[in-house]
Image 1: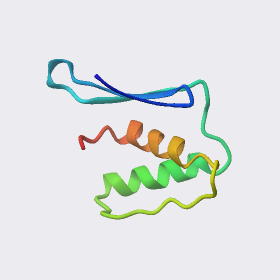
Image 2: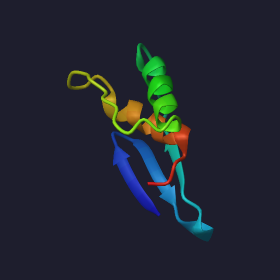
Image 3: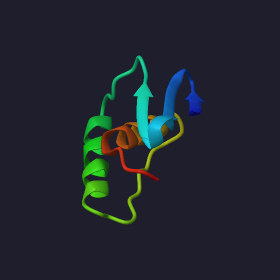
Image 4: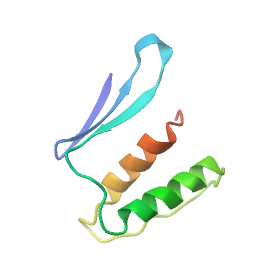
Length: 77
């Protein structure tokens, strides 16, 4: 199991039985523009868009947004 801990938000991969599953565990929910960004980025990944950019100032929640995208798409890396 690979664990990435960022301010008590945990993103992990479970390697059991050859299955790769990302699971985001967080007491927080996306707010502000995050839900729209998560949806647009997820649709881009599902649509095969090779490059996407997420802009934001320090502390705006970019890492949390991308963790939610990873959780949504469940695409092996």
